[in-house]
Structure formats: structure tokens, C-alpha cells
Image: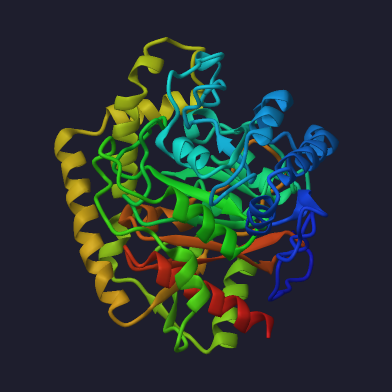
Length: 455
């Protein structure tokens, strides 16, 4: 970390070739879009893709350790039955907090070892209906909180991949699968995407059903995706977005069509603002310098959020930890040894949140959601770091989610783009945040930003 600071406006050096034009001639590195097109033309290609991904996993899983469950024969049987679908033949990794009826769902905890749900989570149902091949379950931190799992960063195994969706981000970055599911209650999609150098997308709150997902904090729990390209990000999100009566946070809406909006692009340059949030001082000096250089290159102004946003992090903590204490109460009551000391401490802190404090935090959340609308009246998207810096060395921590906390609390769409490289040569994601419900416009803005920085 003591190397000379440098800012690079392109993808960080990838552990695999993320060639958007790749086909099943090179299936382990092909995009989901290319795979689906090839399988649509010849369903037999699904088996070739599956074999290539299995071979890739076999070759590097010992170093990356992205998977907690993988049955190659079951994967092959799925691939041989694929004939059509939006994601026909596309291998997908599933974070191990989403229920799968044909595989264990263990939530990163020995308390749930061998647990077999009776039905798929809603998102898994949608993936299967779209023709995806469910490769297996990717590593999550303990109940999607802070206790690290076994996964290593594919760019440098001595560093963290982030969390809690560590296995999903690492699997995509390492070329094991082109798409993987994650979740975010604080920073569990955007941060690992930044650390691993892949695309990470957390759509607006309520767009994707959480039915069948192990809940931590229903006020903030959100489903996200990891992918190798913006087009793949839109492809996966279009499949997952939709109303589900089993999740009251979702609502009836017109069919999601993010891909078409991405293809049309922006007709005018977007209005962007670099936001120095109340936690700006927690960014590493190299990260601050990189983003100020980025703002200068793009000719965008720097804004500071109103003082009212100073309470956002504490409101998020009270809400999520109180709800966590409720949802994990049975596991907590299993007694010492069942949960890590770190998670028990979070639950006990949540138990100590009084009802008036919890309700006040919920009121603050709603007030801030209204206030942020004034920012988006003047700007199409916010530019901000996705993490405090590059992935840290060591595996005792998954890193700080602090640069995601406000946006998760507000339920805004957020997208991490692998556009920068930090001083140690590791990926550094650029987080774009949009108005709640403007997910398509955010992806189009991201495409404009990528093109601008690569020109």
C-alpha cells in the first residue's frame, strides 16, 4: 500500500479475459449474452459451456474457494435438459442464503449444515424458468454479516474478496461463472464487486423478490447481481425483476426492459455529481485522490450532502441490527458456540435498541429518502467510491461497507463499475447511484461513463 499512487481509467487487470465478443469457443470466459445466443442457436452448446466452467472451477477452486456446494453431475444433468430461455445454458452461482430445493442452503453457518429447503427462492425459480444452469452455492459470510468465509480474492489470494457475497463476486471475477447472485443489506454487493473487479448491481429496493432468501433486515435487504459486462448485468436483472405477492416490498409493474434501455443509450450527456458523503474522510487518501481526478477528467462538480445525512449511518445501524436480532433470535438462543462472537455482539446490540429509537430511525430513513430526491432533481447520477480503497490484505475482515450504507438505507439503485486501479494494482470500483426507480437510466449512464473513460 506504500507504492506510489496512480489512477488508471480502465478495467483493472482481470484474472480472466472478459471479452464481450467471446462465444462458446472460449466458454469459461464468455459473457452470459454470448452464451445465451449460442445455446439458442444450438442447445447442445449448453453442455460445452458447463464443462468449460467445471474445468475452470476444478483448476482454480483450491486457490479461490468460492463454492460451498457443487455437484458436477447434477450440473451436467441440468445443462443437458436446456433448450431455450433468456438465460439458456448460462451458468449462474447462487449465494448460499437463497433457498434451493435440490441443494443445501446453509447460510454460512454450521448451525444450518445440511439444511435442505423444500422450495426454491423466488429468484432461483426465475433463473430456472429462464433456462439458467444453477451451478451451485457460493460462499457467504455467516448469515450474510461480517464473519468472513473461506473465499479469497482471485486477483491476490492474500487479500479479502469482500463480503458478504464473497463467493459470488470471486466466482465471476475468476471466470468460473458469468453471472452470480448476491444480496446487500449494507455493502455486500457493491464492495465485493469493487474489490474483485467485476460489475455489481443492486437495483432499487423492492424490484426483486426476497421470498426464500434468509432475511437479516427486511427494511434494507436487497438482491443484487454480479456480471462481466453491463449487458450481462441488464440481462440478469431483467430476468429477476418483477412483482411477487410473497414479498410485500415488491409491487405490480410493467415488464422490466433494462437491456433495451441500455442498447438505446443516452441521447445527451448525463449530469453527474461527485458526492463526498459524511463518511468521505474514511476513504483512503489514494481513493480520494483517484475520485477527485476522475471528477476533474469528467468535468463534474463535487457536492457535499446536507448535514441531515450525518444521521444516516446510525439510523441504518439501529434498523438493521434490531431487525437482525429479531430474525436470528432462534440461532442466538442456541447458545454460545452456535454463532461467532462478532455476530452475537451485533445481535446483542440490536436487542438493546429501544422501540422508540427503532421507530425514530425508521422515520429518519423515510425523511432522508425524500430529501435525496432534491439531489436527483439536478443530477442524473451520483459518483462515489464503492469502498474505502482496494481490498485489504489478510482474511480477518471483509472490509468496510461504509460507502454503501447511505444508498442501501435510501433504497436507491447502485452499480459498481470496474474502472479504476489502486496503488497496489488491485481493482477499485466506481459506484454510480441513481434515483430510486430509475434503474434503466442508471445503466445507460454507466455505459456513457465507460465509453467516455475509454475514449
